[in-house]
Image (cartoon, rainbow, N blue to C red; front, side, top):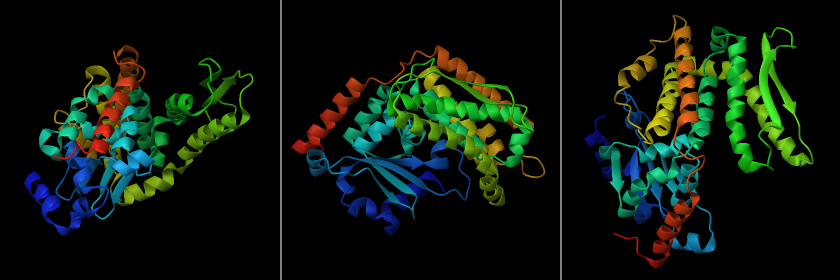
Amino acid sequence: MNLDKIKEKVWKTQDYEFLCKNEHLGDNIILLGLGGSHAYGTSIETSDIDVRGIALNRKQEILTNENFEQFVNEETDTTVYSFNKIITLLSNCNPNTIEILGLKPEHYLYLSPVGKELLDNKKLFLSKRAVYSFGGYANQQLRRLSNKAARLVGQSENEQYILKTIEHAKYDFKEKYFDVPDDSIHLYTDKAIQEDYDTEIFMDINLHHYPLRDWKSMWAEMNNMVKSYAKVGKRNEKAIEHGKLGKHMMHLIRLYMMCLDILENEKIETFRDKEHDLLMDIRNGKYLDGNRQPIPEFFEMVDEYEKRLDYAKDNTSLPDNPDYKYINDFVASVNERVVRGETKI
């Protein structure tokens, strides 16, 4: 479906009436844009329309701390985040939301003055947190690949993927749990003790006077990450059955591409024009064998992107965290205008 037909469908059909009629949306919307494959430039004729947006929190919500985070319409695959909610997600460089700041101009279906102001300030949200948010999400995509994938890359390499996932998650532990000195938890792979393993993950821990409940929760998260790899096969039986494995593989590589743009060029590029042919080759099965399983060359590609990401992490000029003061000043300015009734067009 071309862009004109998409816009006509969104604005002129009953399917999307909620955009005008819902109490949280309507005049509160500051931005609407395309999401999914249309936004990435990887759509095919049968691709669904995904719509993503942002709506200002209403005066009552701001003054009374009433909770509104997002509106979801599953029938049309539309998600509209509240302004206050998406600011938190953007500050963490959340892959599912940061992409809304990097659409092609024509892929914005609606943009208010406040929405344009948000786009003009998008660099405020860029930081090294992208390494961990995108990296963690990429590892989730990797786990969606097939059971055979683990055998293709070998048990030792698969153990490295698990370790990477935990290392990415550890960055968020700093925000969620009592402070853990960088050298107090050391995770690494070594010759396996477990039977039928070549290598496995070991840990050296040196913690003193540490809250037990925080450690219990942290340990539970790491344990769940290890266990989740055992569920890959069940997930991918469905993915293979519905022909979606190539799509998962494509999105994995696309995540690396977007993250590298952020770290190397300090840009958010959602539409992957230059890499279009490669991404479509992946989606269309060029890197799957006769049994619809990923071939070794695909995992070699993943390894190369991992190396680039490691280098970019160490050499980027981005700060460790976004400038929260400027972000908070921007949020306060917008919300004050809402309370004063100064955000209407």
